[in-house]
Length: 326
Image 1 (tube, helix red, strand yellow):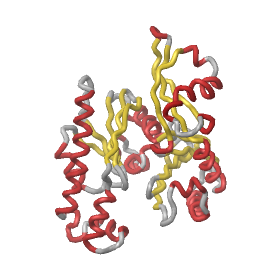
Image 2: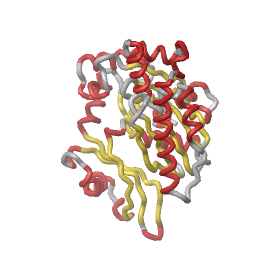
Image 3: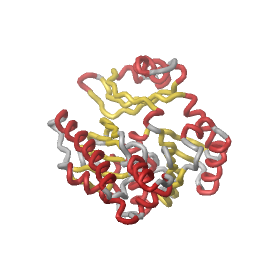
Image 4: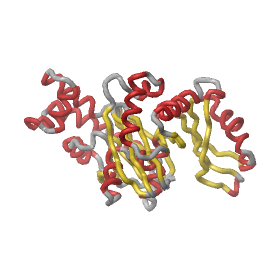
């Protein structure tokens, strides 16, 4: 773990910050993004987003170095096997080899991207390495750096969400050969699967807690914020209203189908647990519905650690912890 650093993730509706001091997690915080402020506005450095980021980071953070968890749609990931002689020059690898390997998946010129990689397996008999490579548009990362700098924070590291979460898997779940994590998010849920600590695949689920909140908002003709509070507080047993439970069934069905398809496609892999986390993991009827539909045991990700600061981060923003570990 880094000695002094803050792990930061900017989601669709919230910003999550974990602060590490003296090699220990000191604090985990979550802030709602105000209306008119999104990750895209922060990247573009609109005045309102710039002011919000400055206020949050300057007020909240004692640590002035940060590591950023990048969203799935901000990076391109690719596993590849390359001959070991290609690794003789780091500059050649990042400026020639990786741009060539990514060429067919890029939407802009390869000169508009930064490239990096991590070796995760050596294949001596083939004189090769298996690597996880990543490409990110330069303007996105450069604008993040500017936005953080204007708030007095030095951005020293950035990593895709699934790889940051993979660091956490290798640290805390190293004894489990196959790990599946369900993130029940506000806008969209997804399941990430890791094999021996290495990121394998993500399956997105179109539904999230937002659809249930929208349903409650329509029922009571109220704002989404009011609907969220009604749902969270279970006013009038609203969590168990038929319309809400129907949406729980839809999400649970998607989760079950995702796991079943993975098991069918990987019959030599044993998956007996599904860890869960995310902004919607408080909704018990949804968890109960998922648990009843799947064969795997449903376990809160926060259960893998005892430290309360760590548990809170694992529940709401595991990648923010993962990015501070290596």
